[in-house]
Length: 346
Image 1 (spheres, rainbow, N blue to C red):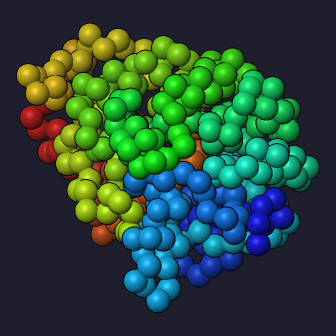
Image 2 (image 1 turned 45 degrees about the vertical axis):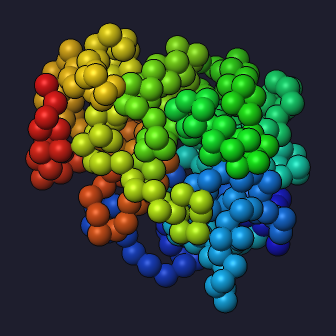
């Protein structure tokens, strides 16, 4: 069952489409349909934290049934036509569709085919999450745009070139190159437009808070907003024993991202201590907490430009834990909890 005739979708999307049993936590509703290309042959990437890494099988080879999760949940496979038919019937459930490549030699042409098929029956805006290692020039991005995508994402993930090499490149004998990812991001901005391209960054891979702030600012100045994730360990990945960042740390980075991306604040509005942790902001933090948007999932927008369409419920934590990225506007109880997590910030 290979793309483009077949596609994976998140468990949350499968539940929303009536393809899998299950229910969401109170107040949670999926608003973005995530689709992931699927192949019998594993992704050629060897990223140390990823459930799609072809190194994961080696760490999982003692199990009778190898784990096939991604972002810690299963991604069931369905015929593309069935997903399209179900989405037509449930069109009001979603504000955006995101097609995600894997690093497979057929992924570019298959993504173009899938986007065209989606566009034949659906009017939702469509994003493409690129596999930069496969992109040779801007013409390929133009083909993707002409097929029907209006936004593009590049998952750089690591905040520094050193960490990128360690966990995605030569450190794990992987194919990905820091320079190539930034080149493809630059092309994406040129083809799709300023702030119609986004960069994925993961907090908690070993970077300092200052390094994360600097890379968010670099991307913004290049014309790309940051879609921020918190590291959370994937079972049987190389980094399965690495702890996620403390919530207080993640909240500080969320505020910094929000100020840079949504308030057009420069990094000189953010103060750091000697260990390069954020010590304060030259901005009223209470105002940000009252708004609540800074602590929501960041990504491609939906109808409400302040709220991400691709809200990825529980992508950064377990159901029993506090939301790191809220999939809805935080309520008053949520905001009180956020205030406690930010108690040491000026």
